[in-house]
Image (cartoon, rainbow, N blue to C red; front, top):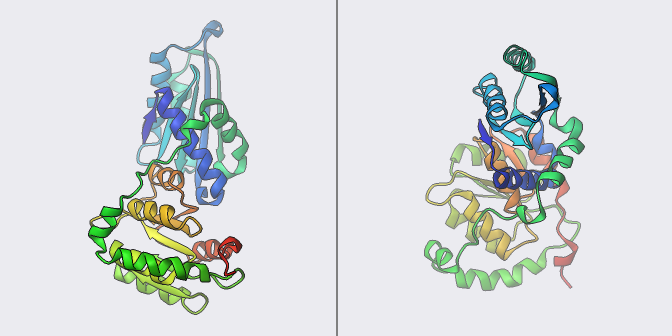
Length: 295
């Protein structure tokens, strides 16, 4: 679990977190928030050493969990933690109470499931993150890089310029799943193919070809692809086909992966192992865009 201290790091994190909450709050199911506020005796502000100690003490109590701890201002710690349970809360409360005895005259501790009070976290984002911090964290892919992976990319792009106009508002969305694991492709395809037009790809090159030939409305994209991570493919889709929705997934659902995905333009994030309803939810939300319908 990382601790962010520098104003710029905290601002960048909260800016991208705000993007993710706006795009898909339900992707933060099973995440928790802890807010700890302290004031030194005689209401003096906490110095940096004490503030840092409070953050590290929190990390020690949450050892082994994924998340991030933010040091805000001179007296507030905000922790966003995945899969936190009652025992973690109890331990954190006890550790803080023991180590803060006689050190702080005021100490408030609040724990809640993240989705139960999104407003509070959005307030922190508005206060501590400026608009320029809400930026894309993935570089735009170069055409030469695409051509190196798919030598006939120029011909495919010409075909795509015609095919993508055939998307018709109201039809069932066409789904593309990109994962290098054959078993995953088989299981997901088998589960969804009877309800939706469904294709799969095992490599980035194959994914680019099928995207350009079949113009899917939604792509489920693995982050951990061999030779080229999924963020590179996301960059390509966002650059060439912004109307196509992309949902990232990974067995490593770390907070950094989530924020990077949403900041780069993904509309959702799914953890492995998959649950069928996660796919259904995103596909149901996806309608072929009227703006790209045939005229």
